[in-house]
Image (tube, rainbow, N blue to C red):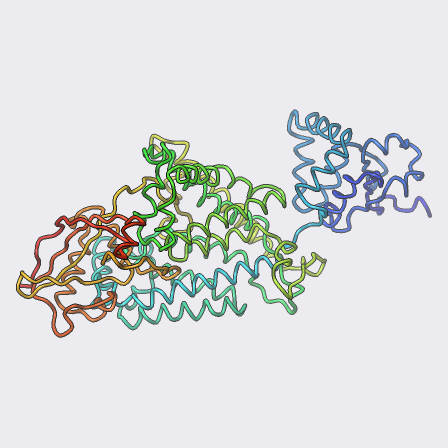
Length: 615
C-alpha cells in the first residue's frame, strides 16, 4: 500500500526550518500554489529522504516531485512556483532561455551563502511578514475616492454648464454639434462620442450632470458600483466632447482614463456574500500604477525635454506661485521664500518626478515609501494652487499602492482581509476578461507611451498611428505633463463696460485676480472653468481665443446664465452699450506693500481688445 499510486502524491518543497529567510518566503509562496505543493522543514521530514544529506538540506531547498525525482537550488524554487497561476514563466525561462539557468543558480548560491544578510534586507524591504497581500479594502477606499471625485466634478459642472455651453451660454452645444456634423458626416458618432447627439437642450445638460452626481453617490455608498462606473464614464465623456475649451484639462482626461480602468477593477458578477467577492486583477492594479507613473514621470520629463531656461537653471519657482492660474494665499507666502529655498525646491521636484516615482514599482515597503512621497508632493501642490480635483484623484491613485494590511492600520473598524479559497472562487469569464483586458491594455499602454519618447523624428510606426487614432475619441489613453514651460509673467484680462465710452466699470470674476486687494482663496476641488480659461486667453491675443469675443457678446446681450458665472454685474438694470478688454500685468506684492495697504497684487495696464458694441 505504501507504493500505491506514487503519482497521486503531492510534490514537496523541503527547506531548512532554522533559516529565517526561508521561513519568510515559504509564507509568501505557500498560498500561491493553492495546496498543490506541500511545504515541510528538513528537520521534520529529512530522515524520509536518505538520498539527501543533512549538509545538502542546510545549503539548499529541495523539491521532490510526485514521481520521486528531486531538484535543488533555483530550479527547486521554480518547480514549486510553477504551480502558482502566475509563476510558470520562471520555470519556462529556466528551461528555455539560454543563460537564465546558470545566472539564477549563481544568484541562488549568493543568497544561500548570505542568508542572514538577505533575511535582514527582506524584512526591511517587505516587512516582518511576506504573506500574499490582498487588495479588497484598498479597492473600496479607491472607489470611494473615485466616486467622490466624480461627484465633485459633476456638481462643479452643474453650477456652470448652462453659462458655458447652454443655449444662451458662451459656446452653445447645438451650434458646436451642427458644425461637427457638417465636418465629420456619418463618422461623427465615433469622432465625437456624446449623448448630446440625441438632444442638446439646457435641461438635458443639467440632467446629465445630476445623473452623474447620482451615480457617483451610488459608488460612494457601494451600491451598483460596476454599472454606476460605466454610467459615470459615459456621462463625463459626453460632456467632455461638447464643453469645448472648458473641459479640456489634463485632469479631465485623467478622470476619463482612471474611470475606464476602474471598470475592470470591480467585480461585475453578483456574489451571494462579500467573502466571495473576486479579488482585483493584478494586471489591472499594475495598469493603475503605470498610469500614476506616466502622470508623474511625464511631468518631470517634459521639463527636461522642453529646454525651458527656468527649469534648466532651477529658477522656475521664482515665478510659479504668482503666475499659476489660480494661486492660494499660501502660494503668496511661498512666493516670499528666499531664492535659495526656491532653487532647492526645484531640485526636489525633479527628484520626485524623475526618481522617487520609480519606487511605486518596488516591493511593499519601498512602494509605501513612494506612496508617501507622492502624496506629500500632491498636498504641497494643493496648498499653494487650485487645481480642481487633480490632487484628490492623484492621491486616490497613490492609495492603490497600499495593500489591505497598510490601510487597515489607518481606517477604524476595518480589519485586514485575508485571501481564502472562497475569495478566489469567481466566474471563469470574469477571470479571462480581466487577464485578457489587462494584458492587451498593458501592451498598448507601453507602446503608446514609449513610441513618442523613442521616435523623436515623428515618423511613427503604422500600428502606433492606427491604434492611437482609433482610441483617441474615447480618451482611454492620454498624454500628461504639467508645466513643461514655466510662465514668467502674469497677464490678467479685465473686462469693462460703459454707456458713454468715458466711464468704465469692471466685471469682477469670482476667483481669478481682479482688484489688487482681493485675497487669493481656496476654490479646489471646484473648478471655475471660465476663470481658468481667462488665464489661458491672457497669454495670447483675442484672435486666438474666439470664445472670448463670444463671451463679451453675451455680456452685451445681458445673458443671465453667463452673468451668473461672474462675481458681480456692474450693469444690473440693463447691459452696457460698450465693452472692452484690458490686460494688466500682475505681480504678487511684497510683504512691505501688503502690510502698508493690504494689497496682495500690483499691476500695470496695457490694451487687449478694441471696444465692442452690438449692431
